Length: 563
Image 1 (cartoon, rainbow, N blue to C red):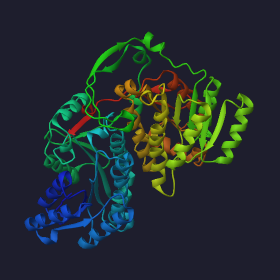
Image 2 (image 1 turned 135 degrees about the horizontal axis):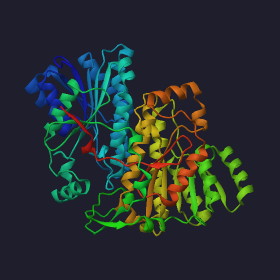
Image 3 (image 1 turned 120 degrees about the vertical axis):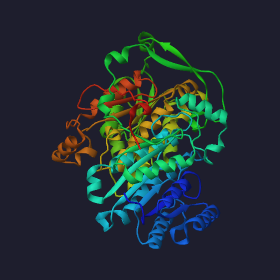
């Protein structure tokens, strides 16, 4: 891409990485609009850059990426100012907040909005000339991190979005390349909030270097990505070294063998070096140094969860996979509360199950997981009814909606809220007895599928959230195992919306089986996960075959090429 005379928008552009990206682009002949919610800083930065590059080449527009109308207006103003748009950098982000929802809203939903707004002006389908969208993720978009599960989830989601929109057919239609850049530890205002001691311990825990790279190094990586990176590619910028591309493997190649599963496993116990007061389920930033403890396959087998007399909550439990999971648990002596927004269907299924298993075994509570207060109330009612909670299955979800925000709200935020509410009653820190939380993801999490980018995004983020809360220190403190199950094509109402011809076409494109498995097959996988799966593990259930666990490679081993 020849950059001279091009125009760019950079969100979060008033300082840090965003400012360095803007400066790099300006140095290469690009006119830049800075979008940032800090008006004083934005105006000051604009003035400084205009003095160096000229008033015609730099503008600033106040913008909070969580304000949809304001975001749309700022992008329009920027395009009107420069008469075109060639490059869009979704950089605005935060690491933590008093409300974890803010992290998702800014980092992930803001990125999706940015890509959506940019496409209106850049896509050839809307009369544009094409261009490039760069989404700033993080190395925590490639690693689970127990100290910031919402952050890791948001940044994994950004990668899922980028890969889904980075498919060749999207580029052919729009002329837009979609690229993700994942900075390592970088010397910005966000990083300055943490002591060097904290960064050293975090780096050791994550097996990464503790070097705070200059933000200019990220700017240089973004610049080269804008010029030449292929669409859908994911790049890492760390340690003040040139950026490099990673090759994310096909999920089937990550399958653990049976032999691998039954060899002695390594679990962790921890010494108590605590750098904050928040508990793991408040998504606080606590770090403990760990030491390895070997547990044999025999020892592990006798730790299997005895289900008789346990109680469970299943969201989206009135039909499909959720109903099959509930039935499977009931068959194994578990009392089950069904949560679903379809009150009529929920009450009907409750009566059917009560006829079979007894009135004291099954209850139904109307609940929309997108309604935080209603969700909290339904969980409390269920716990009050059964006097305890041992198993929580976050299963409620949708594939598509006229509003992509609904997909994120129900699939991702609903799952995160479910885990938060469950922990209040299950965690040993709150007086509970521990238990297991199963999050229903999807094989779509691992597949760059252009037909449903928000769905792929939400499910990839769920896997990161599960793996982050599945770190051993969370289990040690809470007694809760966190497990993800990823169904393939399953014969449910959601999938029945698609013809077999459409399923066959999707399966061929994605290189997966076209069998619509029975929901009972997924339920069997969930049951085994509840009984035996290690915390933080991710399982696939597809083609009516037994579920299998995935083993995720360390991101540095996926290194492909260097910019």
